Length: 446
Image (cartoon, rainbow, N blue to C red):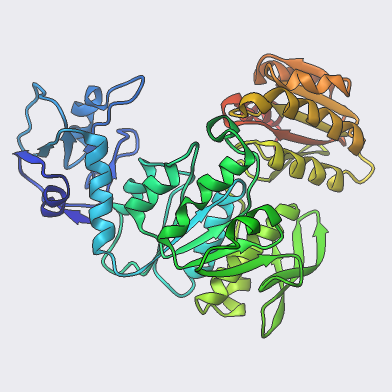
């Protein structure tokens, strides 16, 4: 929560109308805005938030605007600023400067959202936590999260995303983290970074701001980037050389069981999450939890009740056919992991890979999609259905059917199912792969 005084101090805005003086949160979306929120009318590339100002004022305490509007502001708090986006970021920076607790930033190429949620679940057993909602990890979502700091908040767990050089630095100037969790370095947003080295350099923009890094010690490329850093590096992974590591991993249809090791003890863990990549996510979260004094009983309780975030490794069953739905996003690293999990779950069933385009890969686009074809062939996946214009490059190595959109692919797949198959659905968010799931599950989800 923040006050009108906070807002004016942070933004140097001019009060056009004054009513309520305490707000629960900043908001940019009239569809979800709360009565006690204040609306920031951001100018987007397609729409201007000022178009929705009347609706926002009808639903909330007030608004922050950057141009004159011919509206009745009576009974509402309205503040005029030069730039509403900069004002939102200034508010986040101001509220962070007043916060006396700990800030943990979660960064990396894959697994950020799941790791952030796992860390928050474990730490919330002992502390009052504020976390970024969903994957609102950019220069808009992060300041909105900061606007929700409460007086008794003790730890913030913030996911920070990046598409190009400078993004992490910009966010760190707002959130000033003391701790970083780096999940891995992979081929994400290559179009914006130009190379894998560029990805690593972009993520490691966080180093001047933090004192302690929890790093994936099995990722040698990441560790090479940290070798000359003077701060504290705490490693996690599967190798025994790490400070925290997992062993004796058992993959089950309903989740994973493994032994988690610290420098002083070892204990068993169970999670409903799927895939080897989630062993890393869980291990990183447990490393942070142990560091912050969370007991093994609390960790176990948090993990056993934890459900995967939407669109990230969910399992659906329709009349004997199992769907492994992991379609929030895709890059080469996460695509390979998902295909490996498809093969692991196969169990003498026919495996069908339904894969959408991977975006923002720049000059690597054609090669990366050809590589998928190689993987499908090597892994012995019997059936391949593609969605998009790039995924057709996989046909260089395997046979399959490629469609322009998810709806066409979903209708084709539904007609071809005989029952008992195991299906992976994965692709970049823009490919709308969830439409395939909707087609398959319509009317008969178990």
